[in-house]
Image (cartoon, helix red, strand yellow):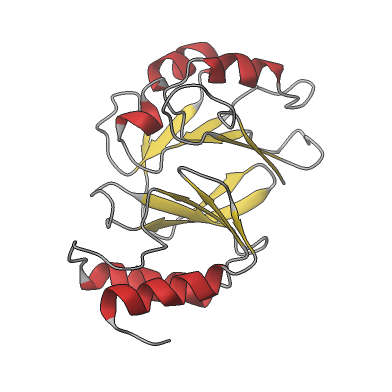
Length: 198
């Protein structure tokens, strides 16, 4: 699996936009964007990306949630590349498939589990690969020192589940990837938000 942040050097406020491809661009790999952001230059970046001979540039878009900085250019991406769009909510009218908790989807050459987690918004989802330990977290508050917000017990259950997964790398909606100490950070968040020691 190869993961490229297409908005890493964007000059405007936008979410990270991750292009997920298979290691060898095999014909059955599923070229996927996790979020589309709001920088129109994503379209050219995707055109320039090596996504495999005889393959669509983009098979699928997964939205972590429907906030504008994560999906503003969705209509243009869909018009240009005709991907199938997956999201928890049908709020963006371009959504084709509503995500279900714990369903499995192919991104690149790996399977990812959909984990619904409404702590940031009611339509938030994370995507986790049990084989690689990679988690796409969107804006889900996985690292919290303290909070003025009262999170639900359902979110505590989500954090407990994520701790049990053995995550090795987190690709967040904003900022750099978190590598190597993910479980310790998740346990710390669980303690800070809920007073729970794992």
